[in-house]
Length: 284
Image 1: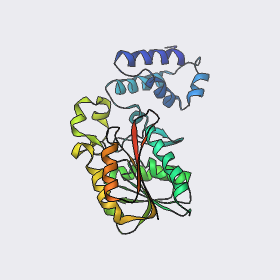
Image 2: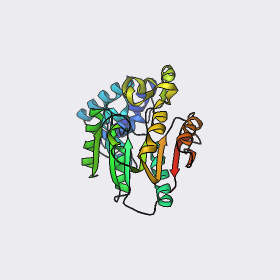
Image 3: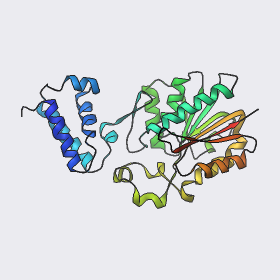
Image 4: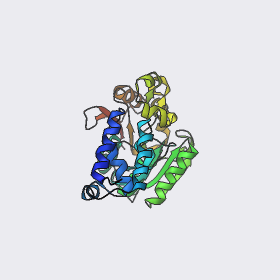
């Protein structure tokens, strides 16, 4: 075999497209095998690919063609410019969640008159939200919770890799954090209605943890519970930021307006123009 990287990439892209997958995934898999980034790959295009590298590429392509997400094959995903380890115990971080980070930091700057804030990320998964907030705002005291002990291990590993000082607590929703009050609460809870399962991609349904994807009450149960439980746990001023499904904005906003009648509750669209976040700003 005397294939170049360029030839291997073309072959791999065609293989994936023939099997109903995105051809671009071949580039990500090849970058991982060659331990390089996009520009590094471009510079290697005319280099030969070794037999061992080609065998690994074939194994990866076979796994992805059968539905395993690229991120679980490579074991990593980029989020807010940092590399997070991911496996089947956690949801793969999405680009939309980066917008929750941006929106939170903007509102923190206008709402609070101090820097030493306490923040909790409820249902942290890979730790992407909690770790990113700590790295972007080092003065924060950050806690992260999850119902899954296995997910917490992944999050702890990411925090260690990225040198983020975070307290991790195991438990359901507000149960692990009910002993104190908080300045900022963030959450990207499971929000897909069980009825939507048949219409979803097999890549997601067969591999990502259902406990991190699906929720009862048409996907709204955890927002309702958070709206009921958080009033007793928030400092004034305070900020709550939630990622939501694009059809859930008005329902989630109603929950929080009901339980925080004095707060400013807003539904915010993502870069694609879909409702993606609800913010609840509690004034002094």
